[in-house]
Amino acid sequence: MNPLSTPAHRILMIEDDPGIRRFVRLVLEDEGWQVFEADSARRGLIEAASRQPDLVILDLGLPDADGKQVLAELRGWTTVPVLVLSAREREDEKVAALDAGADDYLVKPFGVPELLARLRVMLRRRQQVGAAAGAAASSQVQFGQVQVDLATHEVRRAGQSVHLTPIEFRLLAALIAAQGRVLTHRQLLLQVWGPEYLSRAHYLRVHMANLRQKIEQEPAQPRHLVTELQVGYRLVGLGSEIGAGPV
Image (cartoon, rainbow, N blue to C red; front, top):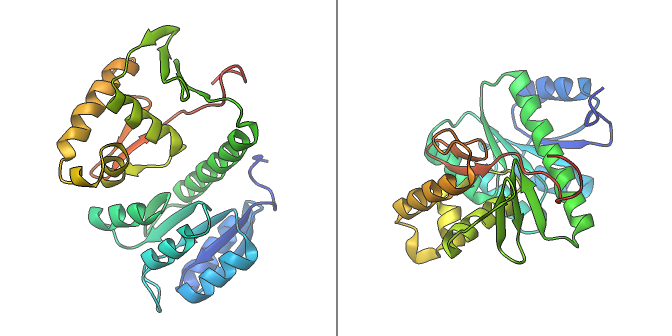
């Protein structure tokens, strides 16, 4: 059995369609996960507070509130991973949900293998973040052949020192801090440049291209600094602390 497939994983599903709730519950329980349900925003927030789930699956079209309002409420007090499961397929809806605090977005109708794969990734990421917090003494992280010391701002690739500009390092640090979550263009512009630069998306494209040139083995086909089309970027392959074992 997959090590993530254990009853210890508690999933809260906030969805008003009983058919979808029943279907997803059966799928998740077949994986050995414990599932709780809520059919409204109000009930979902109560369940989230009382059940303390490991992950939340959230519909945006709830009868008493938009799902983005639920996200905003959740992000006021918890970092629990949230997968938005919605029929809204427009890019601006995806970006708005991610900006509001969602960790990932899957459009209905969806395939069961993709749903389970995304949930496993999010649960694994949550475990890695917890392990990193528990270890917390070290500021060093690694992905692929790249080693980064967040305290000294030193970056090495395949053992060779890499010089990053202050902007490039802040961009890389923001992606590392996201622990594999997609960061939207807006989120990155806010974190790296500030609110006065929100309309200057070209800054982000230029600096991301420069960063890829310095740390990707094949910048034109990046393995780690991955583009989420029309949404933003994510860092793939983030491992454990240097010295803790191979990535």
